[in-house]
Length: 536
Image (cartoon, rainbow, N blue to C red):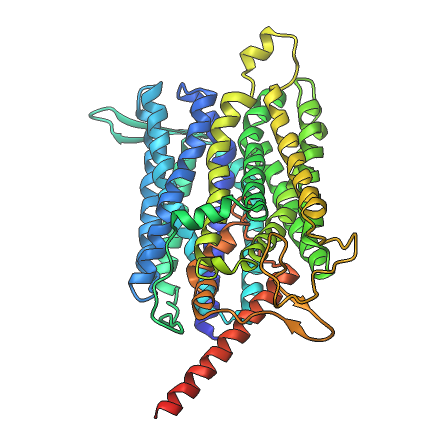
């Protein structure tokens, strides 16, 4: 690998580590800052959703910017870091605003603008897709994933330092302008400092990839009502989109619930909470590795998705019973760690299942980019809705628990987590047995007979092999361009991202599919060259 690429990857690693540390500092302390400034639990949920909303809006903007400027990354990254610095300073200065809705609104604005900047981090996916040789991309993404986990492990150390902050910044003694700096608002300064460091590193050392080239000059297809309708009217496609939404909704709930519950039940401060989140990051990465091993061992997607949802069912049930006023620390941590195994198993396997379902439908041949985008949007919507729903309906207020006899930290609405995941498992069984997908091979599959003449159905397989012969149609030029495009790769990677941690692994079927696409691309290019020679 070229020296310039190694230096650029080092810059991306630095961005990952600093971002991870920043998130590990903001996440555990946000609920304390909101309540200090006179905010409510519901407003805390709204602020948690703010960054998600702005990220959804700005993500497409950054991608379009890179596409339009010749694949140059310094300017988009500079805008991303600048927004992060502005948002962090607003977050820091919110302590000057009178307590109540105005102060909470300032925190909300700060997190909203910070989210607009944070969405630019998705540029790393497109940079890797265009700058790193395909055979080295998984290694690069694995390194980035490990460093993200490493940053979360360093988070508690930074929180330990922040916990002792209690001072003031005198701007003008004459006019009595003093900015209080405590353990809550000082987080904004730390994030701004981190953004400034990676701004400089990116501007000086990040190398732009070569200008992207494709097989043909064709703009990618845009989402239309017909494509969306296709996605939601077929069970195999709809079930994957719903599974993505449910998994992200359920997992995001824990990210929202951990700080306030830990604070009320155990009196934990941000350091204790970030310790738990660091442990969660380790479990998440181990889950990703285990998921990859099982997939390479030819474990069917349905089993991996089923296991992930089973973790949600078990974790969700014991969360309700374990998270009580008189719970022990072990009772608090165990359900969270069980749930942490869910997304690493559901994400790649569900993405693989969804991709195969899309490929089984010839009518969606020119809409693969749109369909992958829908999967990513389902994930984002789950993460957007979950914080508000959790704080409004699931988390119980301390006052409510003190006045009543119910010791549970969560309301009965918490049962939506295990119930929704149980429904996902039932859906998998319905598709497997009733619709006859037969991925588990529970009965003799006669679908291979005359497969070339058979129409595509709900259960059509992406790749069907005969005795030593691979039977499949050649992908079209439009299909290849879409699936090998940068935007497709970004959507594909984002749809399985967990707490900002990159999932670098792919299922066995995804690897096989990508190899087939590359082979088809090569064949089309050879045909194009042959046609050119014949014309001459």
